[in-house]
Amino acid sequence: LRFDTSHLTITQQQTFTIIMTLIISKWVVCMCLIGASLPISSSCAGKTVLRTGGLSCQDKQTILDEHNRLRQLVALGQVHGQPSAANMMEMIWDDELASMAQRWADTCADNHDAARNVRRFAVGQNIARTWTTRPPGPYDAEPNWRRQISGWFNEVQHYQAGYSRATGHYTQVVWGDTFAVGCGYSFYYDPARGYTKNYVCNYGPSGNLLGYQPYQFGQPSCNSYGMTYSNRYTGLCSRGGFYHLGALCSYVY
Image 1 (cartoon, rainbow, N blue to C red):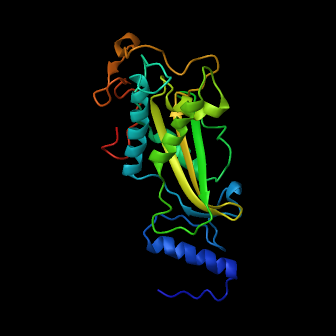
Image 2: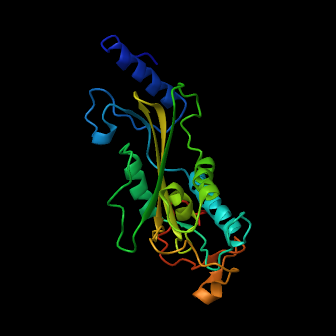
Image 3: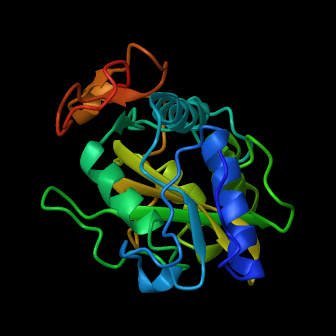
C-alpha cells in the first residue's frame, strides 16, 4: 500500500507511520487521525491513542487468575506477615465494571473515576500507567496484566494495619468482601512521557473502607459466612452466580 503524505507536517507523517505500523502488526487500533471527526476526551488532547476497544478473552482470564491466585495465598496464610483469611471470596468477571473501566481508560486521565459506582454497590478502582520513550515493537502495545496486578499486590511489603494510600492497591486486591472485577486498558503516545500503557480495574463491592480490616482473620470458614468453598481455588469462598452479569467469553468465570 502507498499513501501520499506529502501534505502532512513532519510530526503528522511520523504519527501516520506509527499508526500504519500498528495496523499492519494486527494491533487493535482506535486512532483519532489528524483531521478526522472522531471525538476524544479532553484528557487525551495532544496524545495519540494507539490501542483501545476492550480486552481479549485471554486478558480477562489472566486478570481473574492472577487476582484469585494472590487472594488464595493470603487466605491460606502463605504471605509473610499476613494472617490467613476466613472470608476471602473468589473473584468473578463483571462486564458492567469492565465497560466502565474501559471508558475511563479511554480518557487518558491521570486520576480516578469519581463516578464509577453502580446501582448494585460502591465500586473501588486501581489504576496504573507505565511508559517508555522507546518506539514500540510488534508486541509492545500488549498489556502485561500479571505484572501489573502483582505490582499492586507487592505493596504488601509496606502494609500495616489500617488504610494507607501507599498500600491501597494491595488492600483492594485482597479485600475479602470484594468478588467482582472488570478491567480496561488503553495504549497511547504522550509527547510529555512517551508510549503509555494505561491500566484500570474496577472492583465491587468496593474495598478500602475506613475503620475496617481488609478481611476477617482466621482459617477459611466459608460456611460461617453463608458461602460455599470455591471448587477452583482452595481457601476461597464462592457465592456462585450471585450478581454475575455473565462474561463476554464463555470460559471466563
